[in-house]
Image (cartoon, rainbow over all chains, first blue to last red; front, side, top):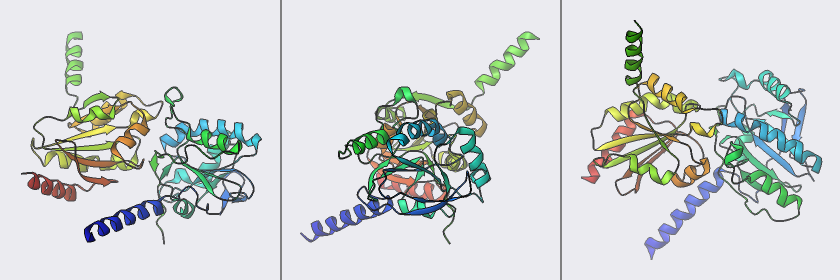
Length: 197
Length: 159
């Protein structure tokens, strides 16, 4: 009996560790106030009363870059429906110059981002969300609650796409329904963390 | 002269160190290990993954430290990027002089992360016994000395 109890405690501890790692669906989304690389202005989010998409992405990751056209396409499709998109680059720009504000601005302008490209200069927001990779997506409802986390789609190749995690979540929420697939496993490049002081 | 050039090209082609096979179904990866290997180590990586590339010399050192009792297989996730080619992986493996088995995975990323139950970050290295039971796992780049020690410990326990 004692052994069973210890095993249950271990399982609970392991589960708790995992849940603490990545922000759980149902948790309150951390607020952020970050500089938009495009115009240098500070953007606060996620916006109250708005359905928001928070995407951790970057300039250097080929997998993130492969999803970039898709994210731009989805922003153009869902922004008119009132959805707010935030792209956040949490990578260390001291170690990787390609992640600097200047490089971010160049990329956003060249690709025609219709949403702010924000610099998480100390990776603190990515840590608060428990993001691990780029791209890593969170959908936050108007009340500030995480309603979806994970990937954009299960494949960067349109022909091989089977599950569209982000659009599925947005469509469900816009229709006033519960999200049918609330959590998927984001895949991509490890975030290049700014060392925590 | 032309024949000499052709022979040179043939030699260059046969000098390729890469041992790259193709796989689309994660369940079929285990079949690529030689039967003699008691301990089977899978390393999931990609040429576009900075820490994976940095890890490569450590993996080569692990491979060199063991005989047929252990087999290492790299599983490349390069194909997840639309513009990547198989040839790019061959060239990379040749340049790095990697001779252990590598598999060019062309299935779905989600299927692979699900099959090996990793959280989407690469590299990840996992050791299995012949029956496919997971014995050890390391998330992130390995250190060859620590990994060799861990794997030797596992092999001793298997005797």
